Amino acid sequence: MRELEIYIHFPFCARKCAYCDFCSFDSLSETERERYVTALVNEISAFADTARDRAVRSVFFGGGTPSLLIENQLTEIFSALSHYNILSDAEISMEINPKTVDREKLEFIRGCGVNRLSIGMQSANDSELFMLGRLHNREDFLTCYHLAREVGFDNINVDIMTALPGQSISELEKTLDFTVSLKPEHISAYILKIEENTPFAKRKIATPDEELTADMYLYTCERLKNAGYSHYEISNFARDGYRCLHNMGYWQGADYLGFGVSASSLFEGKRYTHTRNFYEYIDFSDGKKTADDYINCEEITENEGESDEKYEYIMLSLRLSDGILLERANELFGFDFYLHFKDIIDRTVKAGLATLDGGRYFLTDRGMCVSSSVICEFLLRMS
Ligand code: SF4
Image (cartoon, rainbow, N blue to C red; front, side, top):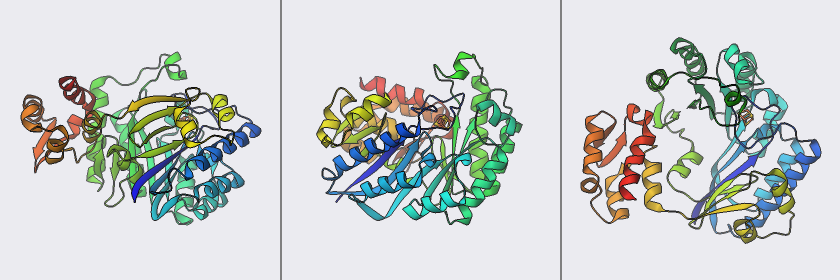
């Protein structure tokens, strides 16, 4: 049976963070949230038949803040998911915000079958958290983390952010030390980017310059590797056996269905993304639509056409420490990949940005720091 991943988007937040441009809203009423959950359940149900011959190996509840869902809403969603062939060892992940859960909620989430939590900590420094507009402080995070362990979560990711406005390497070091002292199974470390139309962009907030940002990235890689985490993707670090299955599937080009407003899918060779307009989505998803209606409706879905396997292979593989497997690339491209891209490969290896070893071409930490420009060189050569 072919495998499938499922992503479910919850666009609710208790308050918008100052840097956030994700599709999430902090002003929706309880009634609007209820309507959204109904629309979501309608979409999940519409695809159950289409996906009946697929084995679901991961489900990811992302947002927004999925942990704001109340118990009966979670029950409805899991009931809609019960019509899929979810593998018994599937990874079921949920993003949570420390301020939105207590012991009872965590127990309920675990009882629903969620077996991996991703906790948005971002920083261990209260003044940085305040500046980011986060709801929680370091103590709130710690309480949430320990509660999650106590109720039995043995697979936890902690999200942190680097290159924060005014941040120094020694402040970052404190956040990293604090994080590794808790021994989470997985750490995601993202570089803050100021996105258009966010409060940070409007206030023209400056982040550390390129050189300091790169130093922070390399410092993070080094510190986490020394603490026993393998750096398996640009921003992701895991203990042995704890790579995020959902993300790995995405980077390896697996099929996934994204449900909800703004969610993207790659299904049967087609890529499409739903509208970011909350009301368009809930009005459309009225319980009468088929899977094809969701895929083909211009009103709510932007079709991005056939996926281009060769472009995607380069873009996604170079994000991963596994890199490009030359044998696989030779087959996919129909020519000798190394000879064709020899000058780029040799130059990046000589510059210390990449390594060519054991039939793999992969980026070093320094290469991952400038991955976009390395990937661009390959893509430009192909166009
Ligand atoms: S909690 Fe996450 S999704 Fe919500 S506003 Fe903050 S960064 Fe955005």
